[in-house]
Length: 577
Image 1 (cartoon, rainbow, N blue to C red):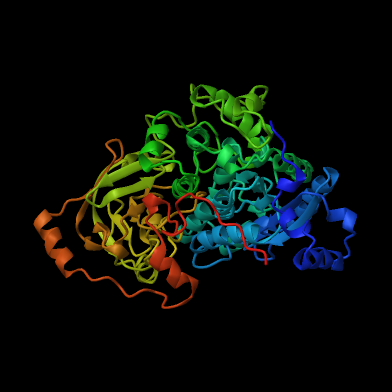
Image 2: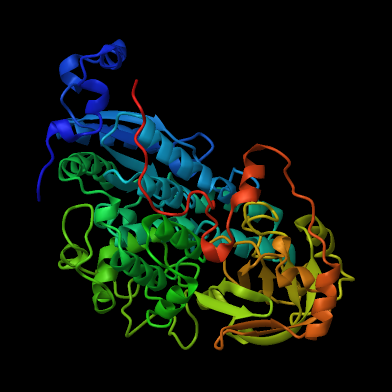
């Protein structure tokens, strides 16, 4: 591979000139205590750090940034740390999805406006992975994604417990009266025992594993637990490797193509990954100029069964997955579905990276011949269409009750979480387990930001009867750690005139997952009458970033990116005068 010269590096525009601006750039760097020989004539590596005291998943990234710097110094570079928006899922309201595009914009502008030649991206919690990478793909300079890593295994009273999955499980048990308030309090500290992202196959591990399979991390980096001593070593290796990538000019446009996204889809389906990944992958693909649709995902979901025996579709946690061989071991078992020639950040192909991967526990990491969930019983992603979702809706049928995969039931429609919460535990609510609970106005525009409201609560009176699943429909999203027969991402959403906005309580809804259908049994003439009467609700925000979001965000089936950002294209370098 041809190596670039020092003069070709973009940082030299700032530091190498003999004019007044060059003087000022060198002067101000020395103002921070740096010697000229420590930064002049060296590639500059940005470390985009999403650390925050409000993001427990990223609370160790301060230390990991130092490990990355160690690798950069070791390889002869000059590392600079740039703080970026920390979109920690639990604390940010109404949802971090509202700020994914904000982080993407910030990433692109941080990289463009500063004298950097390459970057290591530190993130991992849900939207931080696509946010950082969407911006980096658009900027198109050499980057490595350094995943935050999953937290250690949880356990409560001798039973494995995973973040999110068992929170939902035991919340239902508390509402049903099967555990006490004291049990609930005791459980708080048992699932989340360390730094790192959720230890289940939620959105965080889904996205970091997918981008690992796509070649944007060091091989297998996504599986290393955050608290493992191998994690800072991996971070240091990222710092060392990005230096070589800068000289090689190995940037996203030379890595990402249809093959890499296909490999990402294989990993996605085999992991039993989060439905949220469908939105993020479409957004990332559009930034990269790759055509990727829900139909492509549906096709792959029909070929690759769930092979990772991880909650919520299975019964193990991410630390178990790591010790079983991690992502590379799983991909080796799936190599017949992969494109082995796809390039990766370490300069090798994916096929070369997985060639010697071993699996140490065949129950944790299954093969397609012995899947966790056979394709006949459920898929990671079922794509549904019909008169309720003309542009598509999704569900994780592998984590649903098979009884409801073909179902007809009357709708109970709510227009807001407040309305739903007021009614859902009313003992007089006219509801049975065959009812279909619907929450609308939870989409990209309506909420706004498409919050994870889609795992709608089961009415308390049904919980007390032993009901633990029923059909639920929402134009919002659901946590990847959750489970149930939840139809999500209904597009177009109700707030922009989608058919979900025409649905009324009592209308019959027909679900047929095998046929890929979700319909309301309402006469077309009646629907037209309702459409003529429909009026959009007033925007939630009249100003601020959220107002801009509502005006420019696309629908779920299009990736929820901004209309002025989603297309690929060259980025203008800043004028230095």
